[in-house]
Length: 117
Image 1 (cartoon, rainbow, N blue to C red):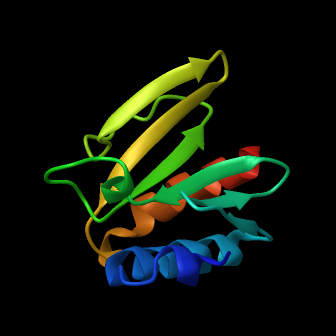
Image 2 (cartoon, helix red, strand yellow):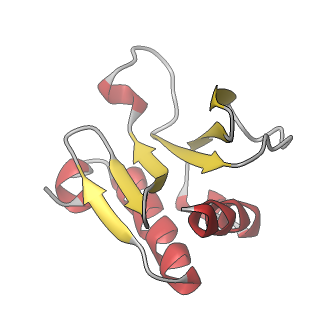
């Protein structure tokens, strides 16, 4: 499966994927793995994930969520949720409504996460 398959019929999600991938490729090599539930961006391990909450949730929600694994909690109010599943990793969930939201701040988070992976 490819990201185009997973996000077929969801143009915002596909546009966000393309923006995220372009930003990551500028920062160095990245592997993309697509499953039936998400797109994972990887180096030695996964560090960012793009998924559609509409696959799992009912009601109002963003078209796509970008999940970023950082080695620290980031205090930005943009995060929908930050969780601390292990001693050295914080998972940050960002609701994204447009590919324009993949701005310099998001690219910096992605670059930081990729460097740790």
